[in-house]
Length: 375
Image 1 (cartoon, rainbow, N blue to C red):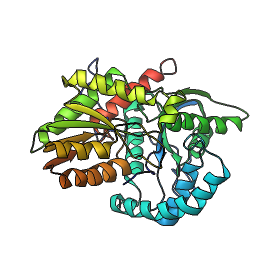
Image 2: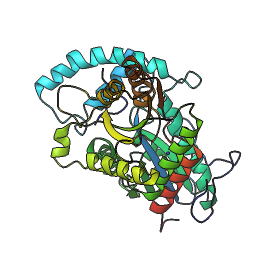
Image 3: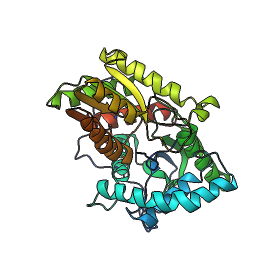
Image 4: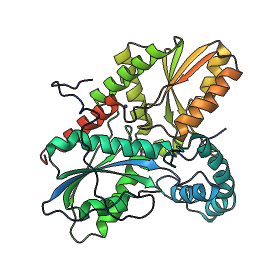
C-alpha cells in the first residue's frame, strides 16, 4: 500500500487522568550534532533508559523534483510496497515513473508545504506528537525518552534507534502510527527495525505497538472528534465517507488483513455514532497503476454521490494518524473539486487526529498499555 506518494487522477481518560497543560515542560529527545533533517544526539547518561519511537511513513525533504525522486525511489524499491522485482518493473520505475511522477508530486507537495518550518505537514505533526507524548510521559521519569522517525526519508528509523541506544535505552517501544495493519506499512517498519538490530552486538529489548483498529479508545476518540467537527460546520452532511488508503486486491488475497481491519473500524465507528451504512460509507483512495485495488474507490464514490443528488458531503480518513498529501491534497482538494463539479454543494474534509488533545491522549493510552512491566 502506498502512502504519501502514489495518488491518482486522533478530554479526560478513564480514571480521570487529563492531558498535561500546554505549558508543561516537554521531555526532549537527545540533542547534540546530527545530520541535516535529523533530530540531534545527546551524550550517554549514567542510567539505563526506555525509548518510545513514533514512526510514520515519510516525506521528501523538499518540494522539488530531485528530493521527491529520492523519496519515491526509496519507497518504490521497498519489496513490501511493490512486490515486483522484474527487469521490466525496474525499467518502468527508473525510465518513466520516477522522472514523471517526481515532477507531478513536487508540484503537489509545493501546495501543502509548511513554509515556516520548511517541511511537509506530516513531519511537523509527527514531531509535535513526539514532543507532546514526551511531555505526557514525563512523570514516569527522565529515563523515558520519546523520539520519532520516518520509514522513508529523514529522520530515518536507524538513525533514531542509534540515538536511543546511545542514550542508554535498553528497552525500546516502537509505535508504527498505522491503526490498521498492512505489510506495506506496519511490517516494513518492523523490517527496518530488525535490520538495525542485526547490526547491534548488544541489542535492546523491543516491543511493537500492534494495530489498534478496534481499540475502544481509538473508536471513541474518532467518534467524539468527528462529532465536534460536525458541530462546527455550517451545514449538516447527507453522507459521511470514511476513506482509507487503497491496496491492490492481490495483497489481500495473499493474506494481508488490511481490508478486514478497515471494515471493522468502520463498523465500530457506525455503532458508536448510531449511523447505518448509508449514512457512514467506506471507500479506498489513492489507486495507482492498472492492477485491481480495493473498492469502492473514493474518487468514484464521491462522483457517484454527487450525481445521485447528495448535496452535503463530509470525508474522514481514519487510517491516517497525521494529515499528509493524501488528506490535504487528494481529499481536501481533488475530491472536493470532483464533488462540486458533479452537482455537490458543500464538502468538508475532517482533519486527522494529528497532535490534538484527544489524539495525544489516545497515543498516551496506547503507549502506557504497551509499556506495562517496563514502567
